[in-house]
Length: 153
Image (cartoon, rainbow, N blue to C red; front, top):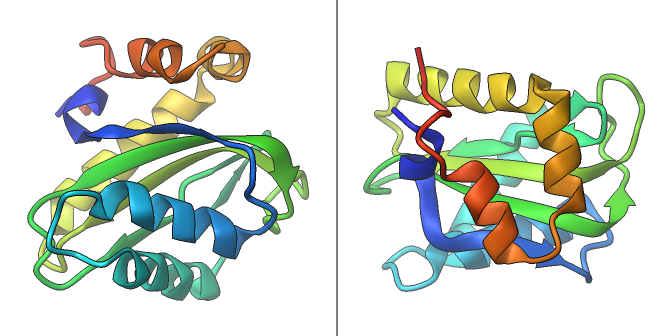
C-alpha cells in the first residue's frame, strides 16, 4: 500500500476557511464525496463520531481524523493544509494546520490499521511535514505525498 494509492484524485487541498474541526470534517467530506454516491454529510458525521471517542490530534500541528462509512468502496484519504491552525485537543495541546483524513468501509479491518500506520509514519517525518507546510499549491502538496516512496509495511 502506498500513500499515493490512498489519496483520492483532487482530495489534496488548501483550506482558507476552516475555523473548527467541524468545518474541517465538512470540507473533507466534500472532497471525498466529490463524484461518488456518498454524501459529504455522511462522511463528516463518521469523522465526528470517531473524534468523540478521543482526539485524532497526532501532535506537532497534525491530525489524522478517520472514520468508516457503510458501503464505502475502499480506503480513501484526503489531505488538507489549513491557512489558520484550528483547536483540536491534540495530544501535545497544539492547534492543527495539517490534516490527513482517512475514510473506509466498515469492513476495512487490518487494511485500515495499515493505512493509519502509514499516515502516522509519514507525519513523523519532520522534514516532509515542513515541506508540506511550505508547499505553494495543491500540485506541490500532491507531488510530495503521491510519490512511490511512501509505503505501508
